[in-house]
Amino acid sequence: MKVRKLKIGIREFDETLQETAETVKAVSAGKRVKPKGHRLFFTSPEALRRFLTPKRIELIRLIRKRQPSSINELAALAHRDFKRVYEDIISLTEAGMVDLAKDKGRKIAPRVADELRLEIVV
Image (cartoon, rainbow, N blue to C red):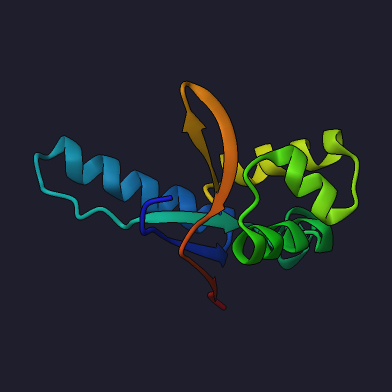
């Protein structure tokens, strides 16, 4: 995985909508908008907790520590069913927390972002 930082945060949905509207307005006016990097926001601590389950955190740790060459190997390391691990890895991939390295066009080795940072704005 490329060197990448992912900022994870909790903030109100209205704040996200307002930021999006401001960005669209600036772009429409021809102003330059500085990219904010890859960010993932949840609307509540409960939503974050539902997404980052203990089993998903365990997968992230296993990927970082053991660097499995496939999801099948990761499932074996986690002592979990392949289908459930695959579903968790796809969710983490869609969120930008995990990448699946490609070998000849096939998705294989899961890799974790170099830095995952949690930001809670109150």
